[in-house]
Image (cartoon, rainbow, N blue to C red; front, side, top):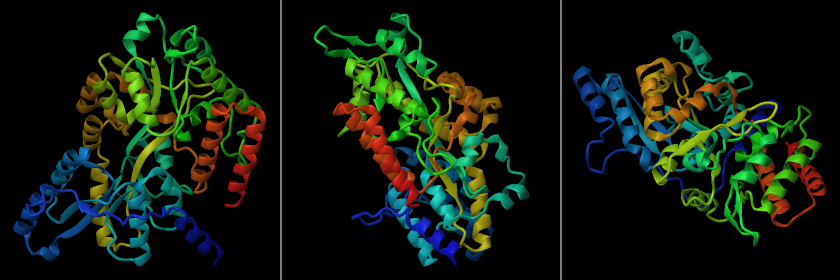
Length: 447
């Protein structure tokens, strides 16, 4: 009884309350026209027999307009080769709206999609609430090559060692840099945090008046995801095995003190506040930042926006060089009947194929998730076109799922706010981190 109660609570925690109604929109052409993605399958179904022979499933997603052409083509290719299955892609809204819709449909046990997308942090809550089908039996039955994914990608889609989802469109943190200016300055991107002081001093251009003309590196501060790897790789545990935070440890104090010092010297800044992302991007485009920490999913955007050659590198590490996974996973709602789940698995495994994986990697900016695609013609062509992504292939096994706790969102928000105050208001680092850790421990202890 207690286990069931806790599972229910865990599932409820993933619901984001919003004043807006959930938006559901079929991702197809204009209303009144035959949907491009489902027309081939509909024609095939008509040729093959009665409508009752065809299983129709919905694919609920959060992909915006820029991905619609690729999505419709991929779904259309599936529909045209499967006479007995019709997939209809449905845009629900952002990840929050999608979460609200799937949790509501699960609670009502009606109108569930066959396949659904979820932002990676929701996996823990969905798993605890029993919302996802265990994919293990399907993987074993079909000999699905689950080990072809990076270990961190596999773990990000698990709950208590059960494969409840599969990684779909994912990204990680990277450093973008101005390759031409880097060469002109005779610099190389630092490989470790210990190399950062010397790099930033040489890479930054600070005038005699203290005004920064060019930052050596800008670090996003609007979410902790971007700087968490710096802490993890330098011996800081976000959450210890005992369920407490290590963010007030000596290692953390040293790291935050360095970051604060670099900000005060004008070598870097923690990008926070309104329009922080767009301001940071513009500083890079305008040559006011030699490098920026950002998401790998925006490589195409950054490369196309800049008049100079854009390089991409792994974040400076420490004793380790782990980074965290961002993006989404796909899962099968567990309450559907078996025929629907079998048809949905057919579609899900198709989306995970090497060929489809490379279509998305080539056209969306998200990462190739299959290690073996490097050996395919598509993979070789991808790397020839985008050699910067070799660094991702080389490190797939050290991309981790990050903190998989339902309370981490609240804890990381507390951390983010304190980091901003420490730097902006010149707080004493040790006392501020100590007070912050107490607040985070309370959050973790209440779970």
